Image 1: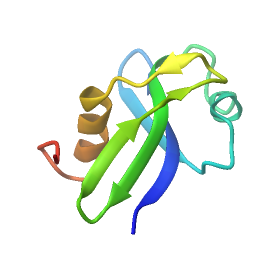
Image 2 (image 1 turned 180 degrees about the horizontal axis):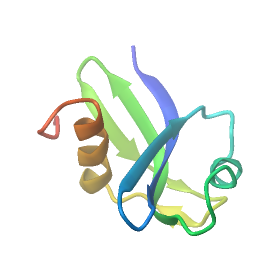
Image 3 (image 1 turned 180 degrees about the vertical axis):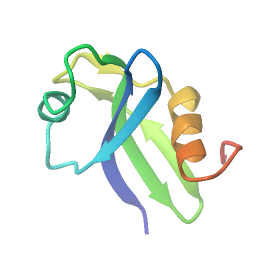
Length: 86
């Protein structure tokens, strides 16, 4: 079973801030909850299952595309993994 959600990766000027949230919410709604000086690095959808994690798609409401393996690596690091699963 795979679980799908949306994500945004921000840069606050010091740190990269990865955020995962429900696919019932728009990317633009989630962005409004963060300071306006946070730069968006990537956004899209994230799917996590027993065989791995993948980022895909884009945010239409923010007009931002994902960064593929770079975004995946950030979330894998967040979950305590150092390598990107295939």
